[in-house]
Image (cartoon, rainbow, N blue to C red; front, top):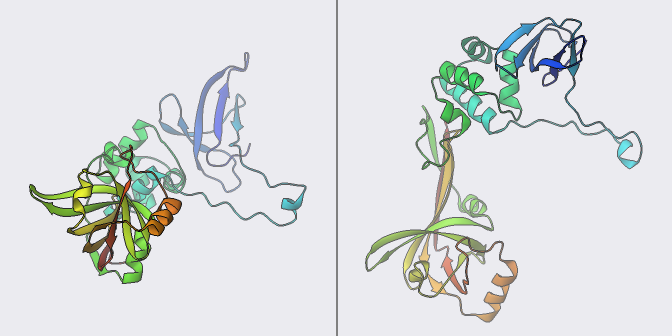
Length: 295
């Protein structure tokens, strides 16, 4: 019997062939994939060391095979590198914040280090019992490990112990603005300051967005505004922000309007007719990035 991580161990009744129990193989004790195995049982979510008997067999995880004929078979296939899922990234980040090794964390959570590495390095959705043990071992919560706090405002996660704040160059700011996205425009109205989210496009060293006559964003026309775009990676406690300042005007040039219509990357999320194009020149552009000091 040979297995790999992710395969399933199935125990059947010798008489009827009906599955009595099955689970995911989450730990190997021999390099050649022979027993025993650490198995996370599907009925209890518990992990136990198993020496399979004659009533057990392995169901191998389906893996894509390289073609044996045709042009694709002429050259060796590039290795497929599995990417961690959201749970794996949160798990690895929580472990690093505690300064724990895989072995130390696995010991605290009563599981195989191989299985913990599997959870961190591959897309996975372990059961509640496993997540609770990991959360307890890492001093966090089930909600945080599963990302249930993603609807909360950013910045509520744990702060970096040794942050590094760096100024971004003009080229870096323009790269992060990219060609389009969602940002916030801030300006002062007779009723006080406002900050409004808008879909935007970048062209000719300016930010453009569409709105409707009489709408709140249209009130920015004729004013000095701040336009801000940012990205926060709550899991990794890092992020960046770019701030543009300029005097806003409505686009009236037919040629510019034609180009904007042709290259618009998305429809405004607010929906409905949005016929007014507004221009924010990148008169002053600044940005900052926060990372860990050792990155």
